[in-house]
Length: 396
Image (tube, rainbow, N blue to C red):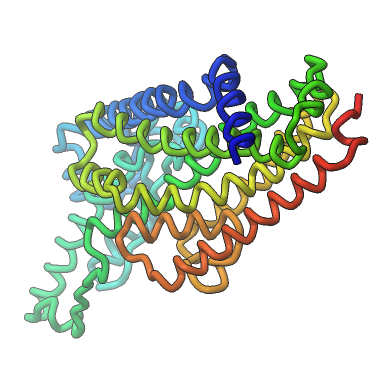
């Protein structure tokens, strides 16, 4: 055990001297994530405010109908109504941003309203625009629709209760905090699991492929210690680097949330839950075996590679395999169950979602831990087998 710790201490010092490792493991999750999140949220806020404050330019083809409705739109200070444009050009003008919206009041609109039928109205819009633009015209249409409905009900001497016999009330079984927790919990694992993988990638390459390039691998193997102890000492460094990187991702996200004054208090409350000792301990307990499994992938590839470049070309495609279960975990149709608790990576993402929302089933969580430690054992076994082959270690 002393030999393993000696190797671990020596390699961890060398790892923290490597600039690429420090950037990937510490600088990127701790600084890049807050900067990106702050910039993106600020940009989105400005876009929303711009869309809400913007005076809309709306073209209308009335076909001699809907005079009352058109007049209501003209009276609004946030809408500029343009008439006389050929409807054939509506699509082009909206795509060119010459128009924000266009309305076509179909023939027979007034006749249909007077006779108690449904009148047709077509809205042309750009789906890539801010939703606030479309919401404003839909609100105006809904207001006019309610006016016509009330007039019809008055003429029949009746009320809305006559045409709406059933009133539905919705009650969310989750609290607002739990709902937000599930939303953040679905996205957060995508970040810290990926950074666990990336944080362990450069140390793994440097500790094995780097030894080959520096010509020191043979020297290390002649040290008075077993090959297994050398492997375990180096593997502990890879695992620690991955776990640190994953945890710093959470810290980086917390910093970003606190720097942004526009973040709702509910989100900050959830982040405070994430940084509670209970949640941090559970996440660490999951990340250690998961990162050990990642090490079981990274180390054999690094041992086999002859150069840093070859190691990168072998390892980087693996990131795409890891992304898939993380994306699946963000879908509402995937829930933590005894079945999904046994699927590597997916189980961590789903468990984190439940832990952050404080809705975790500890039976499912137990299966997640058993599954994680099982795949960690597989990762260790693969590394031991791979490191035991002279052809892999001395491949040049």
